[in-house]
Amino acid sequence: MALLSIVLPAYNEEQNIENTCRVLSELLENNGIDYELVFISDGSRDGTFERIRDAAEKNPRIRGAEFSRNFGKEAGIFAGLEMAAGDAVVVMDCDLQHPPQVILKMWEMWQDGAQIVEGIKSGRGRESIWHRLFAGLFYKIMSALIKIDMNASSDFKLLDRKVVDVLLELPERNTFFRALSFWTGFQTKTVCYEVQERQFGKSKWSFWSLMKYAISNATSFSTLPLQMVTVMGVVSILFSLILGVQTLVKYLMGDAVEGFTTVILLILIIGGFLMLSLGIIGHYIARIYEEVKGRPKYIISRVTENVQGNVVGSWHRKD
Image (tube, rainbow, N blue to C red; front, side):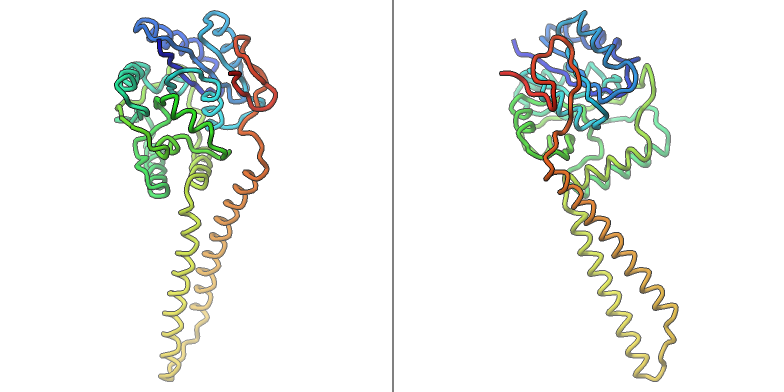
């Protein structure tokens, strides 16, 4: 019988662990699906890992690990993929805002031959207007940067074992899981879902954390921001040429412009372009620096007793 692994990154989600284990276990057992639940506590400061360990003692199909510190959701997802042993792997949020019933549709599509099943949001649930506007802007920018329609995408998806193995072989450390699954190019189907309300706790994403996440993902997956530096340089040159021709013509006509305001504006515009360009280039240099150092994506400090493998540094599954 095929095994389904469900990877659940968690950060300060102690209130949700027990309910998530119960809901997913009942759903999969009632539908005769062999499964395992793989929780990754991303350096949580509450009792998240303790709840995971308690659940693992009650149900051997539940396993988990805890990072030594907060390494981010991307690291949590890839650690879960590394630990997952299933023939198919579903990645979803620990708070069940990704509806569990959709897993059954994903499983059916996988059995019918789909290698990737993408969860597409048909509704975002109850979110503030500011969060909706920012999320919409984020996805539009990301879609333009990586040339993939990210407008309704999410981390909620099913991956065939072949896809998981390809992702784990990628050497890069700054990853964007949501886009990388598109990039692999395997046979993909989609299933729509509506974001559910949290039963416990609140979202850990703030405006600034989302902004940082957006910038990190954009520069880790796309070189378009670097190309924008060239565009800004061309715009500056054209602007300077036009202004130069205008000034020369007026000078030859004996109507020279005093030019103080023009010079100040020109300096401010070009200076702004230069600083922005240096910032973009500096960010990419920082990315190169991080990749060259070769540090692991994550460090696992402890695991549940039913996990076998090396837990000093990044974890590797024993064959």
